[in-house]
Image (cartoon, rainbow, N blue to C red; front, side):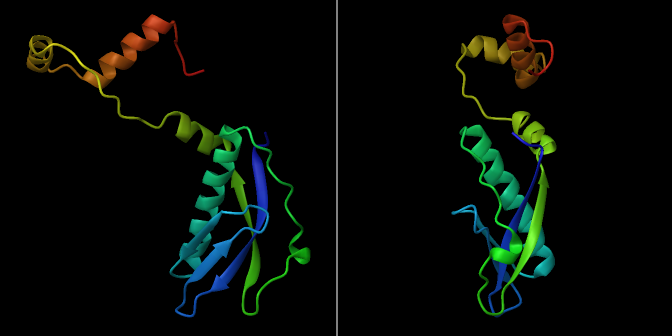
Length: 136
């Protein structure tokens, strides 16, 4: 698993100032932007999430095709998109998820009366129970 990836993307104008962006080496990695600035941002965002998902699923990351070997539709152009994955991995690992839990009404009422932060308490209790001091 590498920390940095650079993949060529095809920016295909949509006729109204926007672009559809595809990555020839990553089928299914498609995005769009209403203008060039947004298209560049969206291309980077799409590539980060696509690579992250490949990593999470244990799939092999393809070797990028050199830009000069990519066939580009008329009016479109190739741009290299670079992503640095460590911050993305950290962000996704620390992303909060919702959990539904059940507890007796009397306990819920007592905790609410005491202004208990349920999320913080559950996290602390789980870390203590599992013997975790820092994120693995």
